[in-house]
Image 1 (spheres, rainbow, N blue to C red):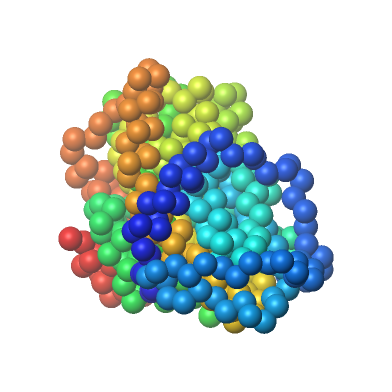
Image 2 (image 1 turned 90 degrees about the horizontal axis):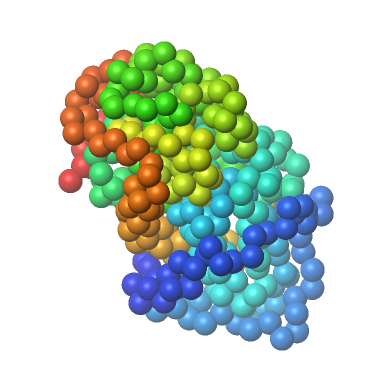
Length: 372
């Protein structure tokens, strides 16, 4: 995987992007492209060639006039989250490198649906969504057997472990797996949104308190197995309906990274957060094969370079942003429970891991061996 991201460029872009909470939210109804995967129009006569970025190699060659392209990018979380800021950074870099001839239309806060809804649209060939930020485990139900390994509980011991994987030769194999198995999408780049933790409507003090609770899950075999192994009842609820489900008692709790927990106002209805860190929130940004194939080689190269930049941006802001949010949650009165001994949690979910690595034991061991 390419890893050339200039720190000076990254720092400058962070100053802009970390103010994402002040950005205008996208329109509720996205402008869908025409029947083709991307919307094309004649390029503006005064389109500027992108400035060269030291460390990224030469800027894309725009001496030949490129058609203007708009790619709709789906994001289930608000723009002020780690993943929302990452999407904004990607969009800004694409605009810069293309001289404004390529636009990434980031539709945030789930206006295009939950992750599974978005994937169904993308894989169904509707042509209204070309790019999406998804959780790695979201591909599990779509033939992403390798991606499933990234969501197994307690796989990554820390962020450095995850980024060692993301920087390895294995990472490209995982990104291209959906394309190679004919799903119709391919990965552009990796990021992460922090470790995922359980939060509940009732007070919890340890793992034993989760027993008997109805915990929201997406329709994912790994997460279902994880919740069952803790003695709780997995309950499938759409992410867009989770707030009301917690409010009305349909579910007693759920799990999310810390930043997403706060930005979606879940502390209002589930003010108890137990820091078990069962999974690192590995993310992928994917694009449909039809959209990718409709681009020129120069435009494809711009997306790759912008992806490298956005991945590095995500890597730099994630931990700091998460720590700031956690301190704010504590100040706001959220009952934050630290887990001092993770061993019982790991032992409880061992069967889930063993079941889901069958046939991929060697590959999974390679990931584990990357821990520093």
